[in-house]
Length: 230
Image (cartoon, rainbow, N blue to C red; front, top):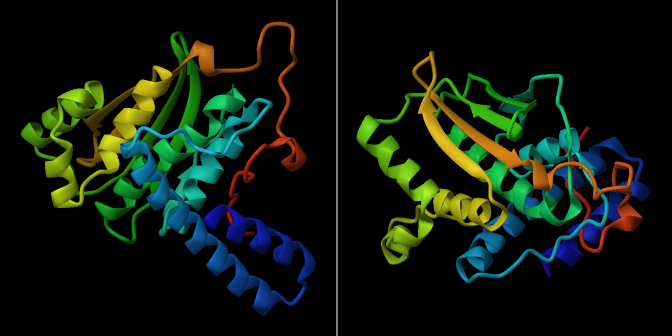
C-alpha cells in the first residue's frame, strides 16, 4: 500500500505546478517514504527481501541522496564531493535502507544545529561510505557492543532489541550480512561517531561486458529511488 501511495504521489508531483501545493505533496511524500522504511524494518526482521529492485547499476550519488531522503532531518545532511562509483541494481534498495538507518542515528544523536557528513570513495577492497556526526559520541563499552552486533547479528537477542525499540542497527547488520558489507562504528576527532561501511567489489559497477548505466524510472521493477525534494 505504501509503494502504491508513493507512486501516486510521484504522479501528482509531476502534474501539479502550484508551488504551495507541491511543497505540501513533497512533505507527504517524504513522510510516506519514512513509513515505508519502518515497515521494511519489520520485513527484514522476518527475513524478507525488499520488493524494490533495479535492473541496472545506479550512481552512488543517487543512492546516497535517496538514503538521505528517507530521514526526517534530511536538511542537516551534506554530501561531500566527489562521490565515486556505481552500485549494482540488486543491492540498491538494501544499501539505501542500510544507509538511511545510519544517517538517522547520526541526526538523532547530534545537536540540531550541526551537520551530518556523508562521503563515498573507492578503496582497495571496494567502496567506502562514511557517515559522520559531531554529536555526543558513544561510550567505549557501548561502541564495542554495537560493533559486535554489526559483525555478527546472529548472536543478538532480538526480543530484547524489540522490547527496547532499538532495532535500527540490527537491521543494518542483517542487510550488511546479506551483501557481504562490512560496517563499523568509531569515534571521530570531534568526539562524535563515524560509521564506516565498505561495499565489496562484487556490488560495484556492472556485470562483465556490460557498461555502467544509471537506472531510468521505467527500468525499475519497483518504486524508483526517493530523491530529495528540490
